[in-house]
Length: 238
Image 1 (cartoon, rainbow, N blue to C red):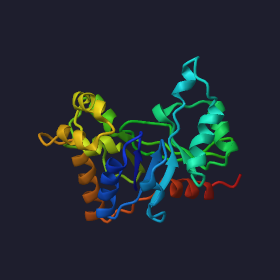
Image 2 (spheres, helix red, strand yellow):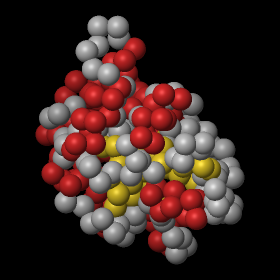
Image 3 (cartoon, rainbow, N blue to C red):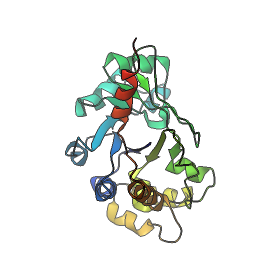
Image 4 (cartoon, one colour):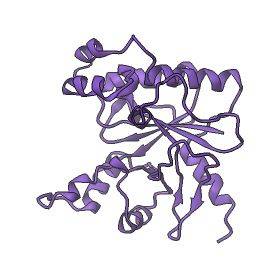
């Protein structure tokens, strides 16, 4: 089974729309982890797409930070009160954060990244949350020095494969950190970002399109993260 996720990371609406368009074109489900208020995300087809939260707790590492973890979490939940899942920005996690998630009736958390590992399975935590690991991310793929000719995962196995993309890298078709570092100073200027789009070698956009085509050609069912979590909970009797 294959599941797609996207970390929004404060992308502008035009960039988010670009990503959504690819999933809609191929009729593939996706879970979007959002960092901020987005009209585009709020208007998504809920049967096909899920909006979860992507809170940034990194400021807690700065002793001058004024917000508590509870405040950060409540701020994003005020924007997306129907959210059932969370993936922290930078994957920050702790026992205390897990309890805050559970206290706010979130169903799952997706902070465990196991690059290129197979046989992924969700499992229930002690506080009732479901932990859903994932095994592929676009920026980590190039950090390993891998090209985007291949995702590096056997898609024919019987396990769960969960991909994580970022709209900014889909928009730029990013293939390495150098392109992104040059472009990110214009992060909120889509018109300027287009000048940095990669058309020379295969990048993140090419990889996503290849995976979407693979799913369609092989009639593989895709599933949202909340569906994975709910299916996991059905298997537990405690």
